[in-house]
Image (cartoon, rainbow, N blue to C red):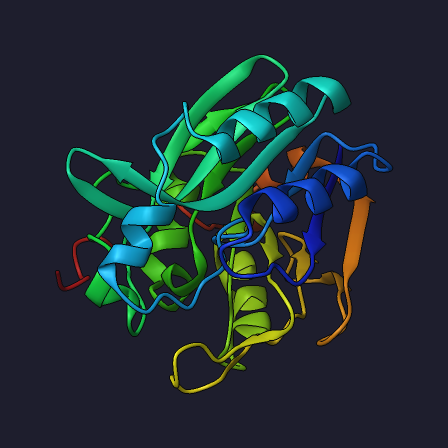
Length: 263
């Protein structure tokens, strides 16, 4: 199975331009699964709820999901990408999952970061896993990495690969995701962005890049530069994530001591 990420610098509010950039770049790529950054078409640094409302889209009818559906069918690939979603009178920081067969579903970010808490509602979908044929994929978004329960839940639900659309500004995630993959025996694909945003006099947000693919044994298969556009595709064996045996005596998920864990 060939999996990858696309790290680039979206421009705030220029949805069509950002979608065109993605479509052009991925038109040169052949893979089974591609992960795009968090809010990759809208940009990240909102100044008001009105801006969120203006850029939020319904799913799957909105332009971002529809363009990803076209791309998935044209390129025969599955895509995971982030967008601001409008649903039921609320806005969510979401990620959609699409493939050649059509729209598969949406995940709404559970753990909101910084000023996201002013503009988005906390996600209500729970952590979901989709079977795309060659693998079972789970999705979490950016700051979800900070909560070990997120990746563990996806592993318990059978995810082979954790797709992780991100707009990382803190330095810790790339190394921490190695541990998340190791402690759950899953592949991890973090798709971050590059560049910066400093809109409306707000503090400058500098995105750290360093998108990466990590193996279930905690091996860093590839990490992108901090400040350069990068599209990367690697071949993996998803079955590696289904072997949770650590040695003849220990099995990762079986040996959990749920009776001792505090809630």
